[in-house]
Image 1 (cartoon, rainbow, N blue to C red):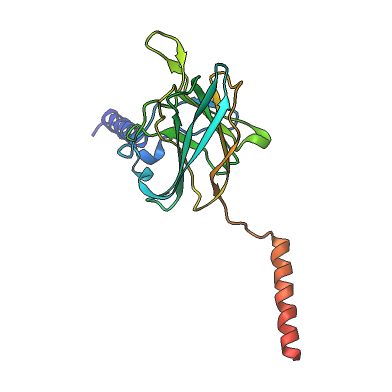
Image 2 (cartoon, rainbow, N blue to C red):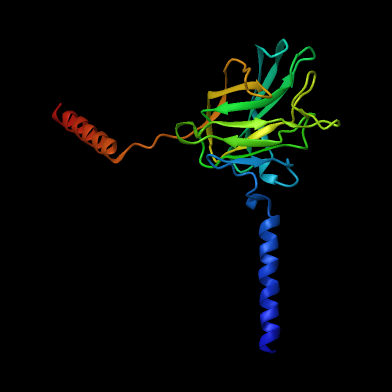
Amino acid sequence: MTDSVISIRKTLVAASISLLALAAPGLAQADLLLAGSSIALSGTTVAAEPQLAGVVLEDRTDGFSFAGAHGTVSGSIQSQVVRAVDGTLDFYWRVFSDANSSDDIGSFRLGEEHTTDYRVNWRSDGLGEVAASSANRFTGAQSSYFNFYFSHLSAAGAPVGLGADQSSYYMFLDTDATSYAYTGLMDVADMNQSHIAATLRTFAPTAATVPEPGSLALVGLALAGLAARRRQR
């Protein structure tokens, strides 16, 4: 076998490995939302990312109402916690706008959602009519805050959001957490984010607290002292 043939085969193998990496559901990086960044969202499915399959642990709906530019905007937000097949937790939200809402909802906003990596998207294989077109995450002390945006162009070419009597597809945060609490924050805002609903609570991932080395040493001393007192009795 000539060196040129060997070189061609190595190139083909390397190319095949690269294509497999891109196709593997768990290796997609497009939905990774870094601090201070904005990304476009194209939606995903369980068929494309099997690790999203799971069991719903929590499901609740909370209403909102606020004064918009042209009247009252009202609706509800559905919050879910899902135990994925890999044992980790995913957090889902869906926004509903009432039939009599006066203005479009431009964004769904979340805070105090602490996790290692912020992987966000929306589910095109679920219920809904309006997709989140993009997401943005803040920096610094607010790096656990991020927004989903509904802005898209209408058939007439005008920017619109989640309109009256419409609902969003499920938006989600895919995490490596295994526990959760009712400590997250959420709200919705109009297209310009100049009119905003009151803040509501939602579910958020939590991490087990690992004692610092100094704390562990104190615990050890306390246990040793307790054992000594028992021996003296």
